[in-house]
Length: 355
Ligand code: NAD
Ligand code: IPM
Ligand code: MN
Image (tube, rainbow, N blue to C red):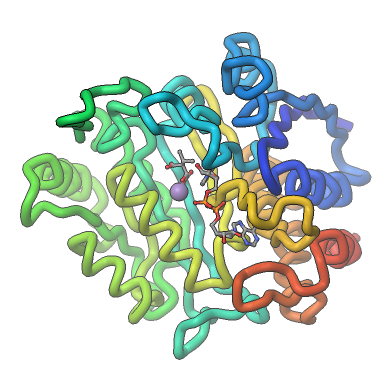
């Protein structure tokens, strides 16, 4: 059987708990078809506290090239900060820009049983947020610009950066079955081109690339209205593409509609490197309580399996999560925490990995 070298970054807060859970499910899905060799990598806010760096060079280079797959937990702790006030334990600059993992792929799917604050529930929700991951408002991340009287961050878009993320979104739309409401293959460009030049440029490059995909409908929303419509007509959406910061905000809005941050995985994908993580953070309020929802991290491991070409294992993992919610073997509290506990939820998923 093939053996995959997997790098694990347990991270901070609930990270180690949810990563353990995802590994248990991945192992169950791999049984009989492939082997896993797991290596744990030290990174995040606790690492920074101990060593003065959130992820050292050797670790970055292993993540860049040594592993077949990388599964990362959430990192960062709000109290671990640089003197400029930004967090010292987060890794977006090092990993997303450093590895040029330019596409942040965030599938949002409503699962029966996972609940939703929406009037019509989450049944008709199945779209993917494609968040640009290397530029936009995050460009000056790590630069420490400004003094205490005026501080600025720069929002920059490059033609090449927009072209590749928009093309990624259209290629993804071609692989999917269209929007739940009408089956139409659609890419929605989300921006603020009514006000800001950078977003107007984003939209014009979107149009140029869209012309290469006449089989996919093009669609537009200003970001504020997009937030509204993700709540009122989520079934309309298929693939959405947007600048980094808008993607950050709207992916948490989206998560709220399908049972909370504990439901949503993310893939950070580039030409040469990729890693997989939950959309949520380290949830310090839940660390050590056995109440975090492991679904996002498990689904992130399923995205990694898919990326490795292990489609059957990925499908089994997703189906097991779905059936655990459908059977109410996992029940969420209104806060998004797991009623019966993370460990019991993990067993429920592992038990449902079929033959
Ligand atoms: P958060 O996502 O950690 O938590 C926000 C809320 O969602 C909290 O109430 C939390 O309890 C809840 N929540 C999060 N994950 C959950 C889960 N799996 N199950 C149930 N409930 C869950 O966001 P935050 O509090 O704004 O940030 C905490 C830390 O995480 C910060 O240091 C932040 O920088 C970091 N962060 C890291 C990543 C990452 O590594 N990819 C992502 C987001 C935030
Ligand atoms: C995310 C997170 C990160 C971001 C933070 C932790 C740097 O919120 O992955 O969505 O802002 O991109
Ligand atoms: Mn975020």
